[in-house]
Image 1: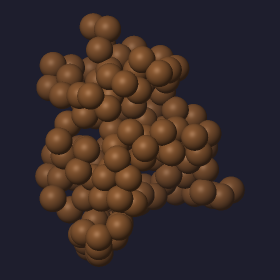
Image 2: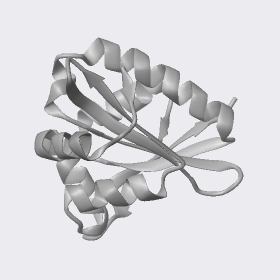
Image 3: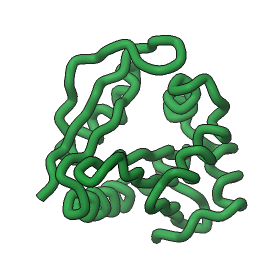
Amino acid sequence: MFMPVDEYLIAQAVANARQEDRREFECLRGLTVEQELRHSLGISEKAQAFVMGGRVVAIFGEIKHDDRVGVPWLISTTEIAKYRRAFLVACDREVAQMRKRHQVLINYTDARYAKALRWLRWLGFEMHDAIPYGASGELFHPMTLRGF
């Protein structure tokens, strides 16, 4: 179930972020996962929490880069293991809606995060060769997905 993001859900997401998500968020600009999450929420046109059983599975959003380009982002929690299938179905629907609003979706994903890379490919994103990115130059894959 999708819900508006509030302080309680932010606190849950920060406390229970998957280690790989935490590492990816913290590598971006050298901020804590909470600082990066709050920044992303603050610049997003749309942000939601995916909640099951009263627990945050993920918080995600969409940043409008310009009139053509959208930047989707997501942080998942350890709860994702319990609700994997429901989460995949919900993500597929949400990405389809983003593709209707933007000519292209772009972002970067930590090259070490195999589960995220597999999930993004399943959603249809094209993963490009990894490049140094972020505060310390870790390898990240640029990713793109054309709109409808």
